[in-house]
Amino acid sequence: MLKQSRKNMTRAVFAFAIALIACSVTHAQDVRTNYMPGTDFAKYRTYKWVTIGETGAPDQILDAQIKQAIDSQLATKGFTKVDSDKPDLLIVYQAGLRKEREWNAQSSGLGFPGGPWFDTGTASATSSTINVGTLVLNIYDPAAKQLVWTGSASKTIDSSKDPQKIQKNLNKAMQKLLKDFPPRRK
View: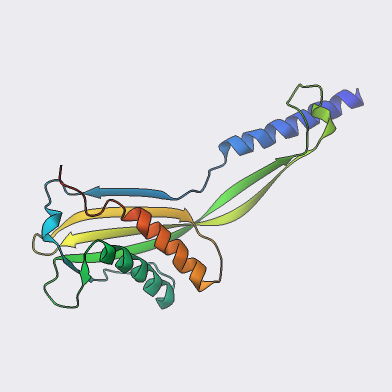
């Protein structure tokens, strides 16, 4: 009876661990974009950074890193940053951070539930809190006074203190976010 109870308990723990694996969210980068239909993006060549409310960046260093990553991508696409009062586009970003619970399950079992080798291993599950960051980039046409493009990138944020690694990750995220900017006319 005790052996059967232990076997049932082991199966329950293993099934719980499998359920956690199946339900856990893979924190890959998620990018979404949208733009105003009918906009002629070919007429835009210059842009200016503006701040509306809080950017969400925790400090001036990260703010500069975010802008540098975006500036770099826009430069490769032929856009020029200006400080004049007559830019073709106005650019605004906001960043946010939220905490999520991540579940990790491990098993040293050699078989499947109900299989002949099932009760030879152990299973465990642990949880941790991870940071997930979202950056929203909005691009406005000041002459038309309207939003012409918007995009967001969400990704698990590595708590690395290495500024070069942070910049590299931001560069990758902005490259992916601005991959299809400006939208091509169909």
